[in-house]
Image 1 (cartoon, helix red, strand yellow):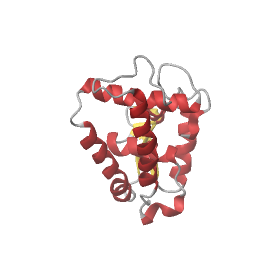
Image 2 (tube, rainbow, N blue to C red):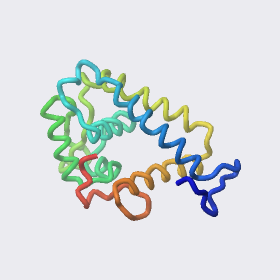
Image 3 (tube, helix red, strand yellow):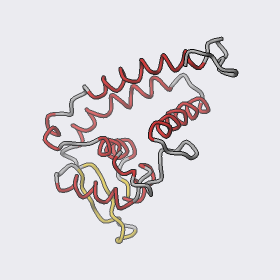
Image 4 (cartoon, one colour):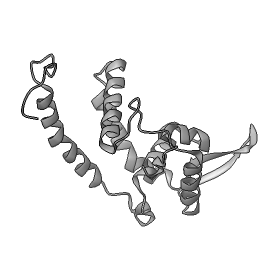
Length: 174
């Protein structure tokens, strides 16, 4: 990594190695800070995993969704989402109801009594991302997200278009 390669120079004259060094320092700090954010007291006994946080974030930001909509957003199989929803429903974190337009479908939502705790816990992270991404153009935001997906794929040994997975490869543990 100490030898610059052709094409490593950025527009500021720094090489890709400089950016790698900065990210190798920054990423562990970011992860460490996020891990130190304790879940609210009301949720501490539920042993929520990162995959649950992503699901809860979508429901918090987008409102009630179907299992298939959640599966598409989480890039996992619908059966994986069904298992998570079942687990969180039994714990009283989520609620499922019939879709009035199609009674075969179930709508998933955060349980009303859990909404304030989840919002208080997850909303600051969303606000921080909004603030960090606000100065960027839509194309720059897309590139940033695509870059993080490509990094995730490279770290996990996945190949493809930069997406983190389709859910068909057992990626439900996220």
